[in-house]
Length: 187
Image 1: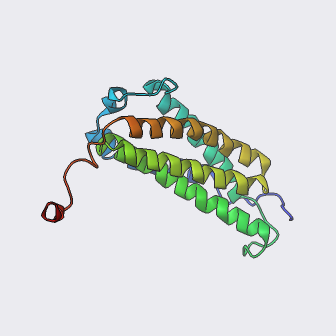
Image 2: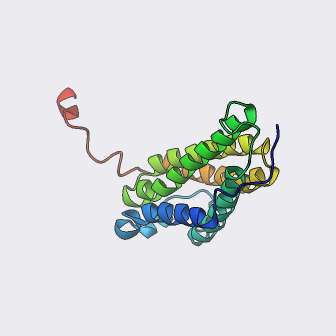
Image 3: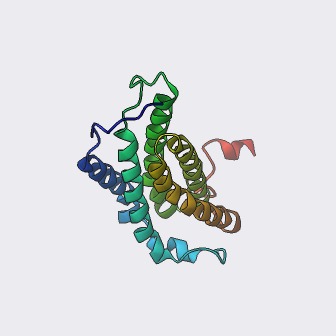
């Protein structure tokens, strides 16, 4: 594999735009119509972090993820068409990081607006799996980028354990709400 100096196609404002867009989607409608006290109303496991920690920690993780994304996006690989292993790994990191940002953006809608700990747990575990793929693919391309994504992976290990525990030990008002049309006729 031949990696050379970056051509700087991914600039700081690209990262700022991704951060702004993901947080805008995350904020609307959950931030406007959601219930911020929803998390603390649950039966939480003893290892659950305090609710005030999430926003600042996610800000740091988002920034480190964007730095990693910029490092990988700006790599020049031997075959830019992606026909070699380095090109495929680079594409895998870029796609998986895109999916990770989508999962981040919709989490608050699942949890705080729809009040669904089950959907939120599925989103969190999916984010963990995406982070594993991103770290593995980035490790062969750029060790610092893999380490930066690894910070998110570590947090998502804890967050997944908390989310699954919350989903298993608390009711899900969204999924238990109303049966699908025609379901009552089958019962």
